Length: 96
Image 1 (spheres, rainbow, N blue to C red):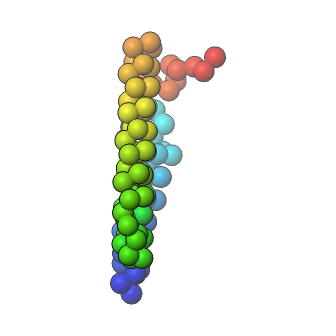
Image 2: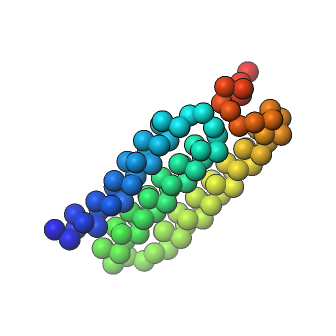
Image 3: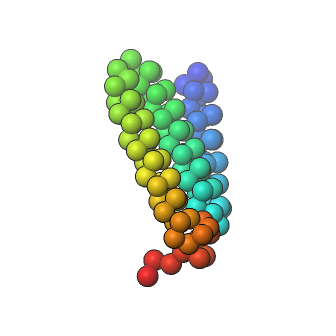
């Protein structure tokens, strides 16, 4: 019973983060925030998993390092998009 309560909150929050990511497609900033929330919930689930198995938390520190790099890359893309297009709407951004 305790195992279910450990996994229920992060799993529900992960699903809510996925729902926000899928439903918010107008602004790049809101999508980046929901992606960061999903990464935080993945880190929380990884931390619970490693603590339940009495493993070292070295891998979780590597995960946090890569997630910070992902966040910095997303913010640099956001700044570049705002400088070139003037806003962060996906309708005004064209790949071609």
